[in-house]
Length: 332
Image (cartoon, rainbow, N blue to C red; front, top):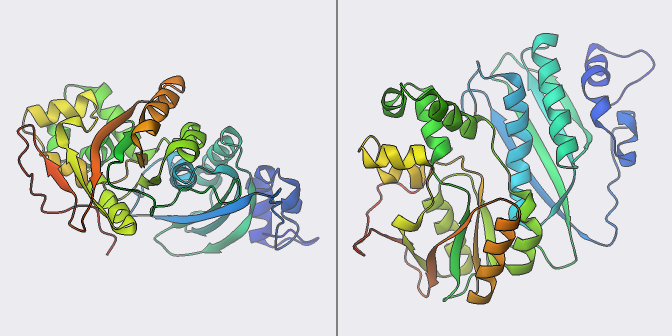
């Protein structure tokens, strides 16, 4: 992102909408084609995710929600690594260049960059006939050697998850006019809450320091709790048992399960939760739960890491295996 004396239409677009977001001195006001990110002696954590029209959001979704989702899915990764946000670079493949779309997009992106102390450092813009795509690479800082990876889970560790699981999958079902939409037709508040969970993730950055201090392994739940736990277990060369009745659900999700509108597999494998999934030794569990409580965020123990290389087991209220036909959302 650069701005010469005789700006091109692309440069004018950048100067108008995105230069105000480049508040870090290392961004040089977007007049250079590179930025400097000071490490301050910390390790730099790097993560990248793209959101694509028709895959991660609908073409008719409000542009402010698209902006927030694009940044927040990356902030969620940083939170699960125990990292403090430091900045991001942005690549936009745009079909619409109208102010009516770009202004609310840029304004929301700026609001989130300030709220999470994650300024824009640079990036690129290109034109496309569609679908639109927003790709963000985010950078975070952790003290040297302190990033929480997926490989540290050990038998006896407890499995914890933040917030509630399955709401985003139900929000997507509502937007697609599925069974949840029909069942909640007389409850607009529940519909709004579920759709919001799909469109605007809530990254758990308030828990990043506690994750760094007390978790043995962690990742965020993006493709589905069941599938993401399987990935964590594979990386740590362990297995797990999960008590499905302990998985935290919102009131709307619990109601839909109780009424047999959706099955529990929809919630466990649906994806887009952007909650933190982590493991902790028995001594660390209480500390994580307490840190969540202090931040107004529920942290719930849902199972235990066990020795072995089998897929995680999901047990119903009677201790019987719940066979899941799918574990997660697949991008391919």
